[in-house]
Length: 165
Image 1: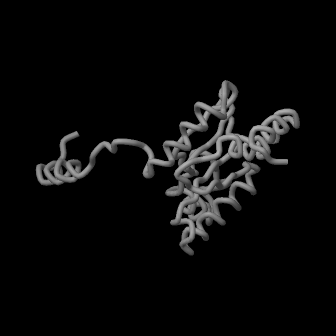
Image 2: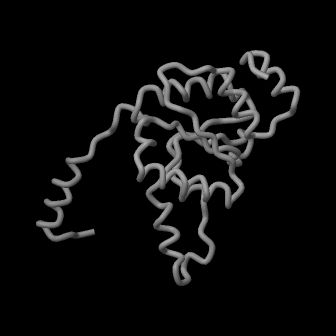
């Protein structure tokens, strides 16, 4: 494609503003949480995907009809921290959100409420976990098992490890 010289120069200048981040996660404890999911909780049946755009999970019915684009616009720039999928076919099973101090902000509360409502409407459970320096692996595993509706025997075993009833 032949572009005018001034357009090419501007594009080259603009492209110099981009850089590769050192990591996918914005906060180091998000990576710690991911390692717990990957290494200690999910096992062979499940996989955790990270920083998933809502538009990759949520479709908009009749998006080309009146009002459809505004529905699409409401989800297009939002993402979730983690998505638990069945490993064999990547079927979405559970959205996981790590809630840090920014989740106390009124705008963020509105965003979280909207996203939770969308997940409820499409039938995808969501689990909110407080961002922490250290995580109780057994308690997180138990919460995930409950949200996924895993068998009672799995939940009883996790309860014993977590020290809860």
